[in-house]
Amino acid sequence: MPGHSPGIPDAMFRGSIVALVTPMKADRGLDFVALERLMEFHARAGTDAIVIAGTTGESPTIDPGELEELVAEAVRLAAGRMPIIGGSGSNDTRKAEDLTRRVARAGAVAALVVTPYYNKPSQNGLEAHYKKVARAADIPVLLYNVPGRTACDLLPETVARLARVGNICGIKEAVPDPERLKRLRELCPADFCLLSGDDLSSLGFMLGGGHGVVSVTANLAPGAVSAMSRLALAGETQEAADIDQQLRGLHAALFLEGNPIPVKWAVARMGLIGPTLRLPLTELSAEHQPAVLAAMGSAGIEIGPGGAS
Image (cartoon, rainbow, N blue to C red; front, side, top):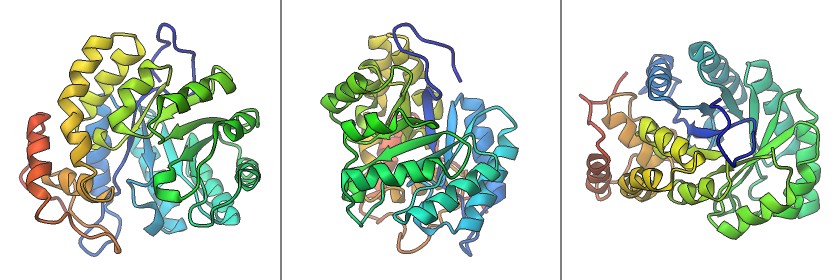
């Protein structure tokens, strides 16, 4: 990972971490040829780490065997250039334990574990869930809080208790509220990894003491998100803000429909992957395609010759 930046404590993960789309063939099988293109694209652009099978990677429709295969292949293709984080969350604690063991076995350096969705557990239930998952495998665990999708909110006080559990090393926090970050910084150890899960507010998050971003936008503009992150962590506020301003239209356009529908369509337009998603997700609607294309153009992203494999 990048070196220590002034005023920002060391943490396990820093900078621009892409929440990678999962490339699929027309028959909806995994596309490892396209995965290699993506890995090379991000290695050249300076992406600091990669999340496999997070929300953007269509984790709900990736079965356990596919997850293990995807992570293992990403680790092989990264060849030590970028750490690979495996998404291993579930709303069934036993399944989350199994998935975490699988990503560890496949070579991931850490597991990203989303809060249990739909069940609506209490804070006590969330704490018990994460403690059990953390014991399942001998790799670091990143908590992942995204109440807009899960209908439960992992509160800072619960995070602080979990931050003192062995291999729980940080959190991807997708609540775009500066007060939430401030509270996490007050309660958690200085080296507990604080990652933004919201591209639109990620600059402020890093300038406010966060360590980096798990980015959807970095699927399309990895060099720009990486540069913005480095500058923000170094305290170069104006330079970072200039890049962020160029990306703001893209940040917004990628959520015109539920993630990852717009970003996968856009990456396909770059010629890096095919456009396939797994149901119940379907292709970006025609009404939103011009806005996504315009945002790509404003961010300086070149449109490729068409989808791949």
